[in-house]
Length: 195
Image (cartoon, rainbow, N blue to C red; front, side):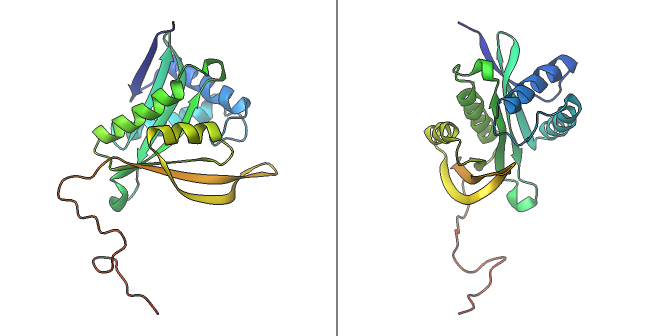
């Protein structure tokens, strides 16, 4: 039985960067839906990783790795919303497991870890997006409690192919005393109906 460990990174040496690059490169080369058309170069992953790890150090993100017998085989992250009114929510992004490590439950480990980490960081809502044809991922997210809140038909372009963009969310809870106004009229930013 392999030894599996979830680790949270704020720094990454060259060895870790090489392992992370291998995961991203090989997932994309196998057709993974993680935001790249072509397998990215090591330099491109280093730039991406530098930004993510800086956000993690600033408590605006978390970057998790799942290591199998000491080798990174899966990654994922959450990032806090960019403006003041969205700081209470985060988006889970680029969850991926190396093709050779599929079936070990690493996707679930990463996603559940990201949800738990976001909750501990005071995040109230986590969101994520996936391709409409990624049925296994959608089922995984639903099993953790995510619900679909929107679907934009054929909004993801891969060459000449188009796929639905599926948006999902999971509420993590609100601080005591939070007023949940939903869409009721009144308050800051309100405007009357124009009927």
